[in-house]
Image 1: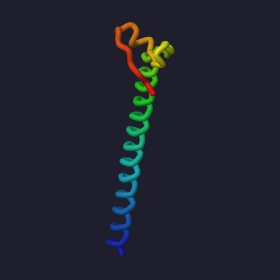
Image 2: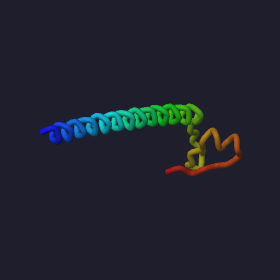
Image 3: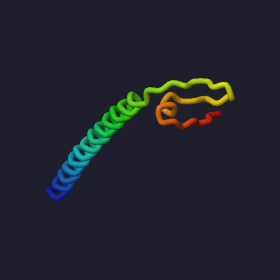
Length: 74
């Protein structure tokens, strides 16, 4: 009888530890997601440009005008 109780206790302890580990992993994943979102927002903010139509039906980005490069975008 005692052995059964002991085994049951061990199982419960393992379950609790497993749940703790799962929770830690979940917290880490959520933290990573938030961090990636913030980095993405920062990258989006940096891209401040607009498109200009030129006479020879090319679309020119304002960035490219500064860099003296013309790009054709379909």
